[in-house]
Length: 112
Length: 110
Image 1 (tube, chains in turn cyan, red):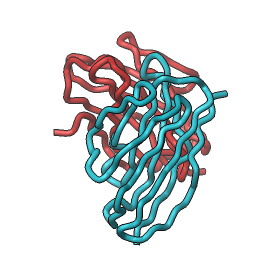
Image 2 (tube, chains in turn purple, cyan):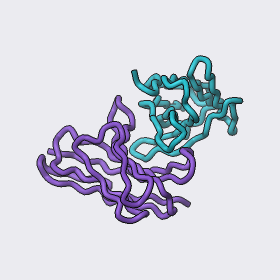
Image 3 (cartoon, chains in turn brown, orange):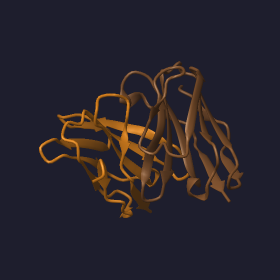
């Protein structure tokens, strides 16, 4: 069974704080993704990575950065959290073919 | 224009009913199509892929109409456990990027 885990289910941070969200997958997948999900907007891709140390911007990368130092781990960084980054953050990993994308349980982030 | 558009619902149907969701996509060159299911406060999970010839998985039938650029999901004999949000997903480029619709919420009522 594919397992994608995220470091926290719920997180509360203050405006201006640096926030790290970690995602780990155990399927040796090359591709990993970070999305955010907001009511009425659906899932939107922030960044993705197709290999270690490689990253590509998604649709809404502003205010975020990512790090992929190891194949199994993909981190999302909010350098200076803002209230409009309050959202559900979902990590996914995938192998060959888009139908292989599996999601983690999500991190609900509240920025005060 | 959004890549993927779907009616947000909610759809409230009695047990045993048949319900259909439609979704339209904007990129005529899109490669592959999926329906995902997302339960409340859970992550999305792949429900089924959608093939050009249409495909069926038990009570679920997915159809693709390339000419009109829409895909559909039909659920027959609805069960209480079918209550969830159904996400229409399109892969426009053949790479691993997916575009998600906002989801259609279904509630099956006893």
